[in-house]
Length: 217
Ligand SMILES: Nc1ncnc2c1ncn2[C@@H]1O[C@H](COP(=O)(O)OS(=O)(=O)O)[C@@H](OP(=O)(O)O)[C@H]1O
Ligand SMILES: Nc1ncnc2c1ncn2[C@@H]1O[C@H](COP(=O)(O)OP(=O)(O)O)[C@@H](O)[C@H]1O
Image (cartoon, rainbow, N blue to C red; front, side):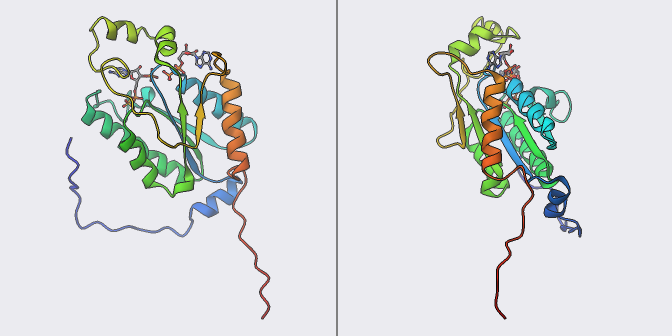
């Protein structure tokens, strides 16, 4: 997939209503919660649980799920390294738009390459990209195998399956890491609750208030 820019003579058009105006309307701050992990680690389940918890608090969120986007926007992409890079790039750009719209955008994709996740982070200001690593062992994911894909990959019927014969590069430093405790996986509700607490503590669930300085004239 070529990364050479094809558009020339293009200009950015600024609109008078900006992100902060939309955030005031929604009483929240637009950001991207990027959930990464192996197939079967629970990304979609966590994304939906988080979406539901935010919704019940009156917060506007939207899930961009890798599997779902491959039915439409990314239907022309497969799982070669080049196509995965393009998949993540596109979703990163869409997520950026959703965050700019003032939404809490929840992206759940394997996103196996560190460089690509970091490139998505770089699209946003640093604090608006919250990387959530669903750090579940391969054995657990493979044991779940809800779609039977690990079985097919082990049988050699799917080539280049993440974790089997394709790499997964764990984050080196992410905002939230979720893992098993004493060999037990927390429930989706518990994990989503952890993310909501993070968002709350960091102030994403209220609008930005301008800093008022008491300047003496
Ligand atoms: N070769 C291979 N490797 C990994 N996954 C595969 C593959 N082929 C199909 N699938 C199915 O595609 C889902 C992953 O799509 P993503 O867009 O999240 O993948 S990626 O981020 O571009 O790597 C993934 O969904 P999840 O299980 O929800 O992660 C699989 O169902
Ligand atoms: N926290 C959890 N505890 C137990 N089972 C889970 C948990 N999260 C997800 N699952 C189950 O694991 C399987 C894979 O979850 P899914 O969300 O589809 O993962 P992914 O999107 O990463 O492929 C599903 O059958 C789901 O019901």
